[in-house]
Image 1: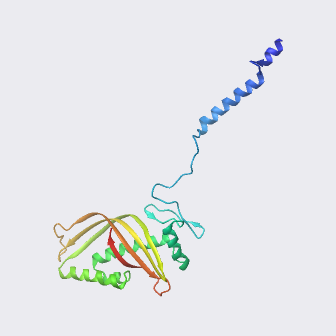
Image 2: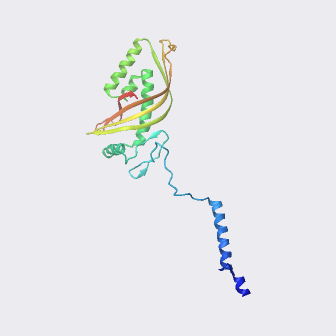
Image 3: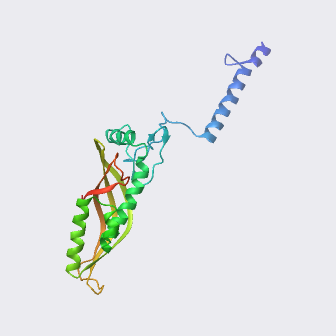
Length: 222
């Protein structure tokens, strides 16, 4: 009877109780080191308003802060893919980089009255509009000084393919300082403006044409 009492405790074998205690101790130690899971852990999702890095031609495209490339599975992404399918050289992330360079060049070119630079970046109709505004400014004896301090956001808002004419609408959010100067280069009182500017610019290109450059076809504040 004494041997049976030593070999059991409350109806359970002593060895089983000891092993159970060791197992509980190890579990508690592992939880202390690894932490515990509460419910189902979801994979990390991109920040609100930012799509995961899209995939085009089997390659993941890096997501840049403030540079929004539509998800190719979205309706807008599908319209962009139509352009990609008709022009293998068209790459949406690279297009955004080119659009930013064009934006800076056009804004600066207009402020400086650089007609040659503008003519290479604008459609003929838009160039005529810009050239007329520059001529009116010169006739008034005024100059324009513009500084783009930053462009925190660039996003593709729309895309269309009609025949061989590809159109992409881009929204630019930029921080600018604009000021009018007289013919002596002196700032005109009350003309200085500083703040964020939201612009919708429409770029277009004939995919089958000899000109490989995207040109500004329309611009408006929005």
